[in-house]
Length: 110
Length: 117
Image (cartoon, rainbow over all chains, first blue to last red; front, side):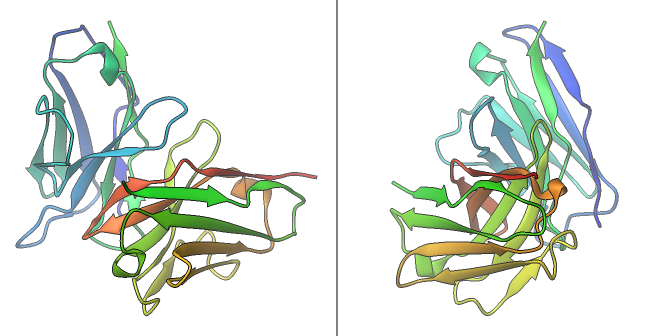
């Protein structure tokens, strides 16, 4: 199985940049696609797609969210961070079965 | 508007069975692969099972293989998860999710399954 490793928590100040990382135990990229996706989950709510294929913004997501990376190292950036961004962020790979998620990074306000 | 509404969760004893449903609306259900994903209380997300649009391809996580069965009725716009031989570790909020290409584009609100005596 592909294991995705995320830091448990990140504290940032409002208006600053948040960088959330996700490292895969093996490459999740093909010759055409980087098969890493990001989701936001607020307390008591279902997850919501933010970024697909590593760097593509999902419909309706603010442009202050962005994603980058390839191979085994991926990053979700929020710039600037707003109070509404307080949530847990999960990466997920679709390179191979079983589909796996990272353990989540909880974004906190400093 | 895409909507996915799960139902069928509840309290069940270990070893018993339960069947979850997910009613889809706002899109052509028969055109999309669907998935079940669960989240144990206070924990992260775990993919459970996938089914292709025509039910030709079905996949399971090892943790549920042989105990859970995913199915769909395209005429009723409904996804199912039949769960048997339930264990305490199956206690979770179960989400259905629509798969667009390689990602989970839409999620339902979830239905809670509690396995306890």
